[in-house]
Length: 85
Image (cartoon, rainbow, N blue to C red; front, top):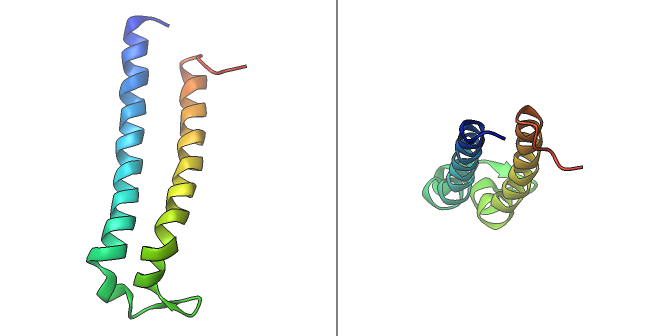
């Protein structure tokens, strides 16, 4: 891979990471701490939604974001022809 392609590849990788970490931060910190009072007015599975996000929701979102990252990186690897065999 050329140096320019290498730089573009890592730039896109860092963009993916930044967006996914921002989503995780908003869900874990925002929904679990900042917006908990508003979310507690909604029930999910018998629990207040703010409590659910603080205890389990952010973990589920994190695991989901891992799968999204794997999908995005496989797609990026194919685009730049650096996929693993």
